Length: 421
Image 1 (cartoon, rainbow, N blue to C red):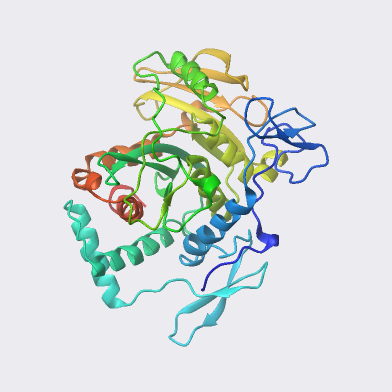
Image 2 (cartoon, helix red, strand yellow):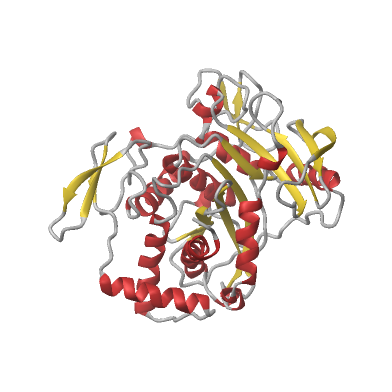
C-alpha cells in the first residue's frame, strides 16, 4: 500500500472537550476554546462552556502515528479504511494475483489486504503449536511468519455473524527484554461483554519511529497503587493517584527501555489508548456500552472516539472495579453510593454472596440498570488464561515487538479454543 499519508480530511482530532455533558464534547476548534492554559501546571485546552482543562496534544505528531496505525491495523487486516475513514468497505475486484481488493465508500481508496498462501497457512499452524507449548523461534523466517500470523489473527477478531454491542476494556502490563530485563509493556485488551471473545488487543510498542511528544519516558517509575484495601477505599485511592500525576494523562507504569538496536518506540499509554479506541470505533461504531477499568485516560479515549454517539445518548460509558467471582444468576444487592474524585463521579456498590463491584455511570442519566451486565469479566477471563499459559514462562525473555505480535495470536487462540462461538 506504500507509505501512508494522513490527509487533513481524515485527521483524528484529540484537542477537544472530553466532558460528557458539554456541548463542546468532541468538537474541534470550538470558538470558545482557549489554549494553552497552565492553570493546573501543564499545557491544557480550556473549554469556555464547561471549564474543563484536558491536556493538549501535538496533533501533527499524533496524526503521523495514526496514519501508520490505520494503514497497518485496518488496511492490512481488511477491517477498515487505511486512511482511517469511518465508512463502509465494498468489494472492488481483485489484483493481478487474484487477491480481493476493497474500496472505501468515503474516500474512494482501493486497497488489497494481506493474503497468505497455503505455505504460510501451514507455517502459521506451526507457530500456534509452538506458542501453545511455550516455545519461540528467533530466526528471520520465524519473524516473517509471526508478522503475517498477527495480521491474520487480527483480521479474525470480528465478523458479521458476531455483532458486538457491549465492549469491556482492561489494561495490564507484561515484562519484556529491553535494554535490561523486566522492562514493562502496557497492554490494552477489549472483549465482547456478551460472548467473551477478545475483539482487540494493543500495546504501547510502536514498530515505527514516533514524534518526541508521543514517547514514553523509558526510565519512569510506577506510582504505588493501593492493594488489599476495601473496594470503596481502592476507588478513592485510585482517584488520588490520578491527581498525583504531573497531568491527568501522564500514566507512569514502570521502566520500558528498548534495546538500542530496536527501530521502534514506546509511546505514552495515553497515545496507545487513543489509538486503541479509534480503531475500535472504526470497527464497531454501533457499540452501546463501554465497560472500562478505573483509569481516567480510558474514559478520555473512549469518549473522544464515541463523542457523537455519547451526545446523542446512544452509547454509554461505565467505570467498573470488581473483586471476587460471581456465580451465574446470583442476585446483586446495593451496598451504598458515593460521589468520588476530581470529576465527582457517582459510584454505586453492588454485592452478592461471592463478589462485590463498584460501578460508576459516566455518561447519560443515572437510571436503573442491571448490575450483572456491567462487568469486566470477559477481559479478566482472558488475562487469567494468559497468566496460566505456557507462553508466560518465556514472555519476559522476548522483545516488545515480538510480544505485541504474539499477543494477537494468543488472543485468537483464546477465542478459538476457550470461548464458545
